[in-house]
Length: 598
Ligand SMILES: Cc1cc2nc3c(=O)[nH]c(=O)nc-3n(C[C@H](O)[C@H](O)[C@H](O)COP(=O)(O)OP(=O)(O)OC[C@H]3O[C@@H](n4cnc5c(N)ncnc54)[C@H](O)[C@@H]3O)c2cc1C
Image (cartoon, rainbow, N blue to C red; front, side, top):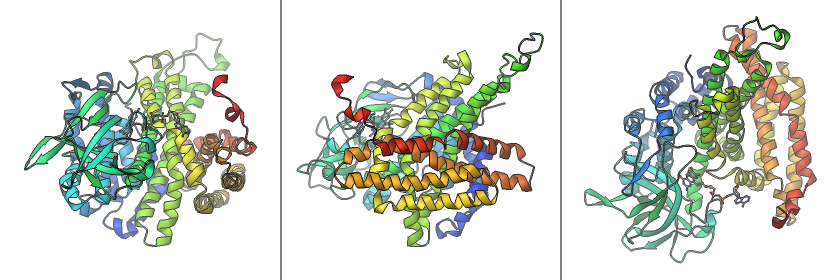
């Protein structure tokens, strides 16, 4: 048996049985598509991920990029897979026809991308970054930039990066120092140091466009002084590309994501780095939030994919590895050893992984669906509603797969026993990869602050009310199907208590005690994540129950869903009550703890 990376059955279940992806084709934007197109897109990604990408993963993890004569040299396998990735036409798949895309729903392209990420996350990451960078130019750039940069990026001829972080400005981008000096010739001169820039240099394409945050001379301190620039590694001089004074200052030696480069870059060492303004001056961070929000969902996709490939590897291993006997015949050494999947504790570890992976995949799907509805629904009301729900779900979709995915990845290693602790087997590599997802694109701490400090309280808690409506609908459907009645009651009660809690915390903030309001933002993020994933498990369990009643053909898959739903709702949902109490109590140990007391 080979590792499927992501289960086709689970993806089809979400697309066609839970979320009705073909219904999106009633929207004018997607009218040209239908299930046959969706299946083709999925099929291409599945095949490419399994046959081309996955076989390259271990070699690229073992042999990271090298810095030679100031430039990055990638593993030779990159040169084999990159042209094929470009030919797969995934970079602009969800962009409009006018921008050179295929106008496919994100629900479909996002799930298709999970195969690529599970196969080789560095390769998928490069095209994801390029797509996000080109989309910024598409949305906010001049016609000239669209023609010069965006079109080439969407075609994969050039790649893109996001150049935000500086040594002193990571979580707090307000402190960034890179400068942009107007020249009066249509471009700015860029000068500054960036760090951790993924895919910041390589030898795959002629050029790389860095979407760079910088301050125009004289701009105010803080966020309002930040602008966005497109800064290529090479710039046009007539019809030739010449060096644009973007130098590699160093390479980060990473513990995971080792196949791709993350770099310290120096812009304008020779005062000859040209950058072109994208969007209005001073609006750089708000433009960049488009790419950051997209990237946060892609980080979530990565978390799910990395947990998924490891989970499937653990299932394969547990079916084959013989060890020990069941407790009832343990004393009888004449009995043959059993595959470890026969042991209840191994099944516990596998089921926990499945609950996280399938729950995370559903979370990713519902978030991508809101992006489609927010962008393309026919009424303003529907677009607004989906947009609010999307805003609320984004920090959860960024964080849940990263944090719980790390737990799932650790369980995959554990299922492999001592072999899992060796680099001969892949679970340790995926565990290293997964850790990044709670750090980049805003750490888990920053996501908690964003969720409680902004998303949950915006518009008087409008997004939370929409989530409550959605959960109520799911509870009603589950109740009608007789699915997990105790969990239905718990979910309903949890949402009522969360609304009350959020109001209390918001009032604390309005009264001036912002620190008190946000003290338990990490617990708040955890509790809302559990509730959202419980909602999605309830929906999946309802569909599985209905399908089992009608069609026994796929009984194993539906029974598996029901067991995973039962597991999640029985072990995680009860924790919500405790987390709500904690958030309400204002438990203040770490607020009181002084730096000197550690
Ligand atoms: C492999 C890799 C690839 C990356 N790729 C890119 C890239 O392509 N482009 C790019 O621009 N950046 C990239 N980054 C940078 C990444 O986004 C930052 O590392 C991240 O934003 C955190 O910033 P920092 O490392 O400076 O940590 P810090 O901001 O110093 O955070 C350290 C700790 O303090 C906590 N903390 C910080 N501020 C607060 C606060 N106000 N409240 C509560 N807790 C807080 C954080 O949660 C964290 O736990 C990458 C990083 C890595 C490791």
